[in-house]
Length: 170
Image (cartoon, rainbow, N blue to C red):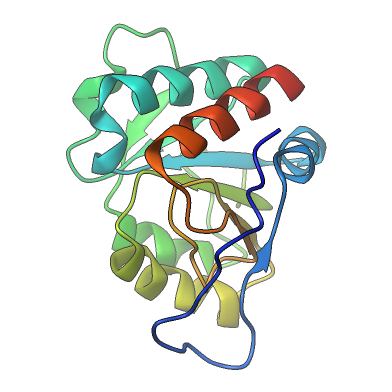
């Protein structure tokens, strides 16, 4: 089992609430129990190893995918429900409890982030953390302080192993 709770060193601070480091078991349980989850995938997930696992996670729980940046082409032909949205716009929309969501069925209760640069997604999640009740889980390889919960800083190998563990647990 990969220890995803290690190495949560902060290089900058973003307020009084910081992310709780979580294990793969907790991440999988939260994803499974979410009423309206959304998998948000960034451009860094476009390498074959991570993209394949993002597709498997989405298929395991029939998760809709918000494809951001230039990640949308990675999901074409993969038989998943992926829609393009700008990640900054998504962060803004998530703070509105009346937002209809990407499918028109209402806002999401849990968002799962994968494939973002730490410094970039931290800015987006700052608004979500401070102005909404949406839970955010980062399963990227870097610790994300502004998520509700996050993996610690992981090596590429540990990150892939952790994603595999989540897939097995879903």
